[in-house]
Length: 633
Image 1 (cartoon, rainbow, N blue to C red):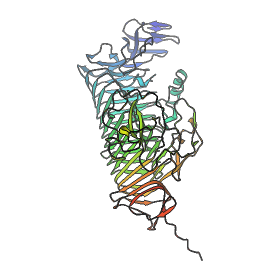
Image 2: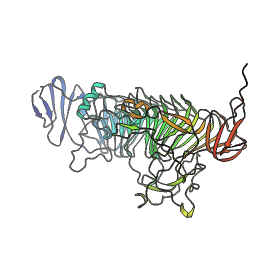
Image 3: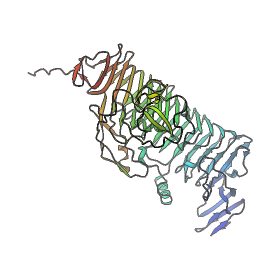
Image 4: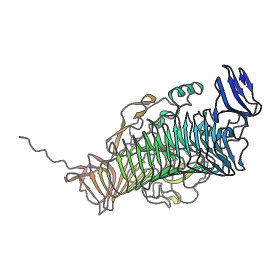
C-alpha cells in the first residue's frame, strides 16, 4: 500500500508493506481514531517504507477517565488510545490489542507481555473502572504527550473508581511529559516489586515540540527546577501505594500530586502517595523527589528519596507529609520547601534529612513541623529558614526580591502564637494559628533557625475578628492541641463557621508570621534568631533560576517576625553568635550555655538579666559574655 496524499482508512486492516510518500498522510473517518502498529510497536508513520506485520487500527473516541478532563460543550474529545483499554465491564474491543504482544488478558487479569510505542499520546494501558491485577508486564513508551495532566500518553492511566494492583511490572518511558503512571478520579492503585523509569525529552525533541506547542515542552523555573517529565502524577481524589519499588525520573519530578479536587467538606488531608521500602530518585540535574499540594499528605516509610534541587515540595492549604520508619531524604540543595501553606503537618520520625543547603525553607507561609528522633544534616548549617516568597509565578519571566523593608505592625503580637480567622478551601476557620509552629523532640541538632519574614505579601487571609463567645482573637485554639505539638495547628472541631463560599463583606488581610519553636529534650548547638534574609541577586529569572530559595540570613532584632522559644525536658541550647528573640520559656530542667564554658549574656529590652529558668518577653538578646582581650606583649 502506497500513500502519496491524504488516505482515509475506514476500518481496521492488515498489511505486509506500507509506503508513505513525502506528502502522504493516513487519517480516520470523523469521530474515529487511527493507530498504526508495525511489528507490534505503535508508531506515528513518518514518510518512508514499512514492511512486516502492519496493522492499521480504527477505534472510537472514549470518555476521559480523569475527573474534570471531559471536553467542554463544543470542544472535540481528547484522543485517548490504548493497547489495553480496561473498564468496569472488562477489557474493551476498542483496545489497540495489536500493540500488546506475548501476554494474556483474561477477565480481570493481565499477565506477561510487552507494550511498546513511539507515537504521540498513545497510552499503553487505560483503566477506567473495575478491579484488575497486572503482573509481569513490560512497557516501553517513547512518545510525547500533549497534556500529561490529562494522562494522555502515560504508560498506565487509571481513572474513575478503578482499583488496580500491579506486581513485577517494568515501565521504561522516554519523551516529553510522558509519565509512567497517572491516576485520577477516585482510582486506587497498588504497585509492588516493580520498576518505573522515565527519561525526559532530548534537547532536539524539546526544540521540535516547542515549535509546535510553545511553552508546553518544559516546566518553568518557578519551582527552582527544570524538566519535561514526571514519573508519577496522582490527581483528583486518587491514591497510590508503592512497596519495594524503584521509581526514577531524570528531570522535573518523580512522585507528584497535581490537579487535586477542591474539598467538598471540611476534613483531614488525604494520603495520596504511600511509598514503603522504595528507592525514589531524580537522577538528572534538576527537579524534585515528591510534591504535595492542597489536601495531600505523602508518606515515606523506610524509603530513600534523592533529588538534586528540593527533595520534598509542599504547596497550599493543609498539604503535608511524613518521613518515618528509617527513611532517608536527600536534597542536593534543600530538604523540604513550603509555599502558600496554612498549617499543613510535616512529621519526621526516626528518619534522616540530608541537604546541600538548608533542611527546611518556608516562603511566606506557616506550616507545622514535628521532628522526633530525627537526623537533620544541612550543608550550610541552617535547619529552618523563613523568608518572603521569591516565587515569580507562572508566566512571569522574572521577579525582584528583597524589596520589602519591615515596618512594625502595632496589632501584631510577637510574644505568643497568633490566631486569626482564615479561609481554607473556602471553609472559614474562626481561629487558626497563623504562625509557623515547629517542635523538635529527643534529638541532637547542630544548626540554626531564622525568621526573616517582613511585611511582604503573605497568603490571603481574613481580618482579625472576635472569637466565638466574645473572646478576643489570638487566644488559644478552640478544642485543638497546644501550639507546636504533634496534633497540628489547632483546628476547631466540628463544621466550620460560614461553610464553603466565604463570608460576604469581609476584606482579606495578610498577617505577619512568628516562629513558634519548641525544643523538647533536645541538645542544640546553633543560632535561633530573627534575621534579615537576603538573596545574592536582586532579580531572579530563568537565566539564574538556581538563585531561587538561595537566601542568606543576618541576625537582627525582631520587628514583626517574632521568635518564640520554649526549652523543656532537659533541653540544652548551646548558643552560637547573636540571637534575637521575642519570647523565651526555660523550664527548670533546661539550660542555655556556651560552647567554651563562658557565661551567657542575656538582655531583655536592653537590661541584662540572669539566664535562668523562667519566662521572658520583649526584645531579647542572647550571646556569650564577651571577655576582655588580654594585652599582647
